[in-house]
Amino acid sequence: MYTVTDPATGELIEQVPNATDEEVLAAIDRVHRGYGSWRQRSVAERAAIVARAADLFAERTDELAAIMTLEMGKRINEGRGEIGIVVDIFRYYAERGPDLLKDEPVAIKGGRAVITKGPIGPLLGVMPWNFPCYQVARFVAPNLVLGNTILLKHASICPRSAVAIEDILREAGVPENVYVNVFASSRQIPSVLADPRIQGVSLTGSEQAGISVAVEAGRNLKKSVLELGGSDPLILLDSDDLDESVNVIATARMRNCGQSCNSPKRMIVMAEIYDEFVDRLTKRVADFYQPGDPADPATKLPPLASVAAADEVAAQVEKAVRQGATLRTGGRRIGPGAYLEATVLTDVTREMDAFYEEIFGPVVVVFKAETEAEAIELANDSPFGLGASVFGTDPERSRRVADQIEAGMVYLNSAGGSQADLPFGGIKRSGIGRELGPAGIEEFMNKKSIRL
Image 1 (cartoon, helix red, strand yellow):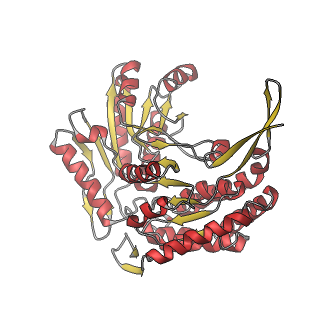
Image 2: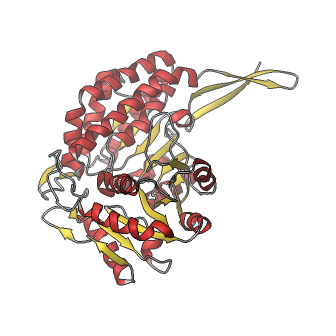
Image 3: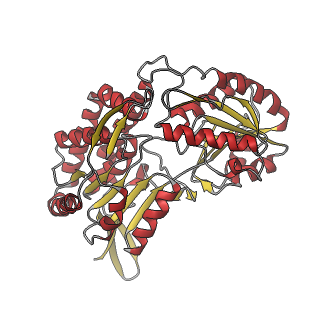
């Protein structure tokens, strides 16, 4: 079942049956048939439809935000903000797509050539629950402009978001066989990837989900883009306004109740300001203690996406303390619903699980670094490599540190983020490939060389 359970109350709202194997095959057939005609439409026509989708997402901001609040507990204002970047993504590819898809002349020995940029065929998208609209947008918008067709499997707790997105795209003019939502189960994904009509897969999700999909994609020689977990470091070199730095860092970590792959999760602070930073951060994080209705704009601490998610994060915190970490504040489950107190941990060492694992919730882990070199070593000592941040008053020093961090993205004096025109993605166990920006339209592109 695809199930909507209000994470604020635990109330079961709705259940939708999984698609049968026959229904999944029929969906594959639809996007295969749709590809033949969609790829023949001009880039300008496809871009115009994507532009219309942007307008419709903007018009339905409140509706979509309310759905996300109900399904996964997102604060209503954060839901509205999510739709804002969805609109930006669709508009970016509608406006820039035609230029990004122009033929590229190539100087070759003994003649001339061009590289044409076209689609490769029907694609499978496997999407997560933490950003139910944004994650879909960054996969769908560029590929619709490019000319690929899409079979979309959303997270099992987000059926209403899945239906709303499909309705908007249909109203925008996307043909019914070009974008198809299917309530498939995880066990059906291998057979979808084995189908010769599906040419690639994009997954955003957990490390384990990425491994499973990568195995099946590799077994069937299918292109894959994987955006997986992250345990992003934030290095605080110095600050001319420590209260402001603490506020920015705490707010960034608590965004989406800490359930963001590229949220700064490991704060690495230079020794000379460490004690004062931890004291101020602990007080600031305590401001998030009062749980509330995520539909109320005044709420600071929403629930996590599910009771299971809250229990998992609470168990990680408990294990860290049991292994010797210092619990500065928070860490307790609050019920009913999927609430967890905002938490600060210090004194986490390499012998503890919390040093290397991703904590996907409202938990801040703070490390002390005696030197710049030690800060960089701590930042890079992770199986993940999604994003990172460097805060400091000296731009040259911050850039020098940023250049040595092993990550797909580094932000200077900004605690992570995402924007339509900037490539997004990581290295190491954080995934493969890039989304957004010019790179985002190239992942499932046939760059065909034509010698003239």
